[in-house]
Length: 454
Image (cartoon, rainbow, N blue to C red; front, top):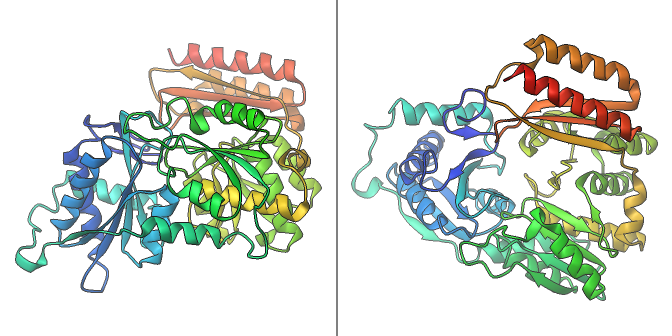
């Protein structure tokens, strides 16, 4: 089951083991039909949907099923092949297509796959539209709608999609700057960025040491990329590089490594970019949007800069929704999703790296020096396996335990207890300035939840 009583959609589109329900060709075809049905309600005569993917073996199968479903509803398909998720969002909006579909399971291993959909403006579909797609599929509401003759859709390949995306990315780097003399390690996770990421950094002048650029359909995310940043970290130290970048399979997020081989997480990157944007008068409403999982240290650092932090539920889509709703232009997640709404509509690992490199060049400082913009509070995160999903606020023992923890922490710490959107676990996260105390409280809370939900 997905979230919110959904049948197939979870927190980030449809995801699962490829060729096992719901990630089957039959469901993919129906999703294609439903997406085409929805876009045909707009005014103009010919409608077009972009379809792109990462480098998984099952991508061929799912891509073709989606294209078949879309064409069967009289909508044309633009196939872009392997391209990062944000690249597909960019192509969708720049080509004025009606929608974009990404075939990817992001950081999951190769046997999984997923489908996420962007509307014509390049933003992920809201929950209501995903629910409507499910309704169209399971109510069989499209069965009688089958165009014939010249009204059937056609599919064509967009051969220069990667080139267009590379030009777009390079244009987000200040024109008067160059990366000449900079040594970078770039790990593409054998994923969707394996062609475009190396080109971008090399064309901007950097000397690039590449990892994870030989996809074979099976090795996406395997012992490399953002799931294993230690691989890039080791290469940074070995090659005396100035910085390392570890992308995930669909390149919508990035983990940074400084020249000493230390990982710099998304919270520190947000602090660095917020300070830079604010200093240049480019941070809308002096506010950053992050999730409930971002470290308290980010909040404190932003406050010291005279900036505000707004928190949302976990998931980059919720960060983007809040940004659009209230006119903010920068936000992100601790996991390395950064959203620069002035440039793109979704998290973009390569674009984020370019923005951070621009800050390094402007300031003439290393990533390690810039990362001192915030101090991380000790944080404990525990996963509690559970058999059932209930409203935790209505479980009196859990509610009482959480109240007790919050009283103990006061304003010197934070507790977050939430169900995972993708696994049968409850995540318990506590942070504060006393490492021993938060460790004890986290284990007590985890035990309480395990007993209460047996």
